[in-house]
Length: 461
Picture 1: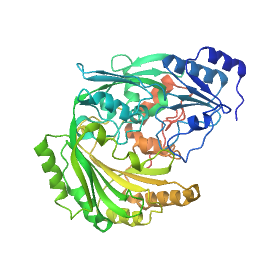
Picture 2: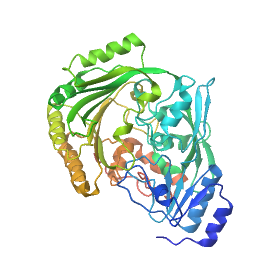
Picture 3: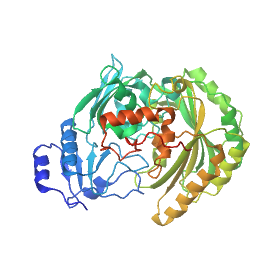
Picture 4: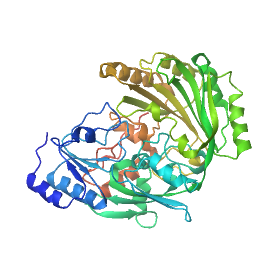
């Protein structure tokens, strides 16, 4: 454990409105933990901020003391990079301000807000924006990594609705970043992750939306090939976002299922007709829960599947095809999944997300395609090796079908170097140049790091 400079800590204490939590303090054990129970790091200090000024003070203290910095927004990322061993964790958990402007149809929210909290505030005005598929996910990490969500087909990614960011830089400066002020940095923040500073405020464009048609439809595992083929062959309208998965029954029985989870934001007759058109291609489901729901409820569909403290290890990649060999491999590998909590899911990029240019934002995933997530989850630490081995073997079994593209928010902590390069494709070199301008010393490196000293890693799937 790093020994802190007590004199420097006294100076920080006098200039800090929030809580400074040391390993000997009550609440430290809870405060240091992130959502993924596989991550077990012990910061030398947790700086739980109450405002932007606290973030500035914490950054300057950590740099002056030569300590590594991590930044915790929602702490939900599977990579666990919100935590540091022996450094300073800048914790934004108490930055919960949300302000909706229903006339301008915008919302400003602080970096510790979760999507459930933001959706609750915007919903009372009948407004929404793209934001995640799990309500406990923080807005900061998801947005900075691109921001997949149920509204991708009609409104694009979270970054496509981002209007401005307040950012604390590696020098402790506070910048209001937008297309009008720092356009190069704003471009990088829309997908470049936490590489450029601490995002303390976000401003998003909102859209009129109250109810959506959605829910879960599950089939016996024996029907998995039919379900996956239906997903491949079905032409999804912009208004419909489908997640197809090989999953386990939520009752903990270990029963394997194939399932559609759907969200349609169109008008009632069109919504129900489109979903029925999808379902008529498959056999009888074992479970069907469809209906009209407030939009914030849709963002809770997967909450119970990803409880805080469960151990997680993920691999993901875009696929070059979803042919018969890929479908057979997915089914064969899921049949061998050792944990009754694990899942394999596919999302098909289409609609508005694909009508943005590849280099208009840092997110390069702007062509129709299948994004695969292999999500291993378990509770017993003794089962860690088995579950990680299954995930890696499944990923390797699909090697010849993987496209050289990866979604940065699905990367695990061991996805480094070439994996990060693959997440940004043709935008990587421009991100490196931006990193060199705003963080040449790589102060913010606990992320899926864009190393300012490297611009020519070989892409890998």
